[in-house]
Image (tube, rainbow, N blue to C red; front, side):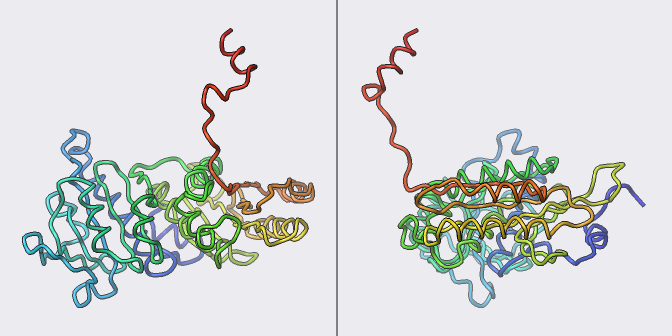
Length: 363
C-alpha cells in the first residue's frame, strides 16, 4: 500500500461516504465544473505557460437536467449554432470554447454554440440569452478563473458584478491557518459591502440590514464552491452539512494527514452563524455562543481546528459580550467575525485631509 491515500481509501478512513460534489443539483454542477476546469488547466499547462491560451478561450457551461431533450438555450445565429457531443476527459483546447449544455455530473456535454472573439462577447451572450433561473458557469481558461451564476440572481446585476472564483489547479498545503485566510478573503470579496456579489443576495431587495430568508444557506453555498476552487486538488473533501459527532457541521475540509502523523486524515470543521439587526444584543450573543458550542461538538478524533464563523449583519456593530470570546477560549474554538457594512467608505481627497495628515506627510 502506498503512503498516499486515494479518494476511495480516504472516504473509507473517514468512516462516511462523501460525494465528490455536495448540495442541490445546481450547486453540485458548479463543483463538477470546478473539478473539470482544474483537469483542463493541468492538461494544458504547457500551452498556458507559453501564452497560447488567449482571451477567446472562454466556455459558458449551462446546467440542464436533460441537456439533449431540453437544453434551455436558444442560439439565434445559425452560423454559430452547433450540435456537438463533447467528452469530459477529452480536455482539448479547440472544442472547449463556446456554449456547452451539461447535466449535473458532466456525463453529458453538448456544445450548442462555437466560441468567441473575446470575453466581452461571452458576457454579451449571457446578458442577451440566459435567464435568471438558470445555473451556469463562465470558465475563463487563460485567467484560471470561473464566474458562477446560481439560480435567482438578476442577470444584469450579475454581469456588472459576477461571483468570481480563482481556480487553483495545483496542490496547496491545507492548514487551519490557510482555511482561516480563505474565510477572510471570501468575506472581504463577497460580503463586506452591499454591492459585493453574495451580499446582494443576503440583503432583502438590496437594502442593508434586512436579511433575506436563510442567509446562512446562501453564504454556505458560495463558501463551499470557494473552498472547492481553492483546496480540492490536495486530496481534500470540502463538503456541506456533513454528519459529525455533535450533529451536522456547516462545512468540513477533510484531507490526508502529513507523513508521520498519528492519524491518516485531518479534518477542520466550520460552523456559520449570521448575526441579525432584527435580534437584540442578548439574542445575538446567545446565537454566537450557540455557534461556538456547536462548533466544539463537531470535533472528531482527527480534527485539528474548529471554527465558529460569525457574519455580522447587525446595523450597529456593538462589541459582542465578553461571554462569547470566553466561551470560544474555554472550548478552544477559533472565532472568526466578518462584518457586513452599509456602504463602502468614501475616498478622501487631498483637500479633505486633516492638517495633521498634511504636516506628517511633508516631514
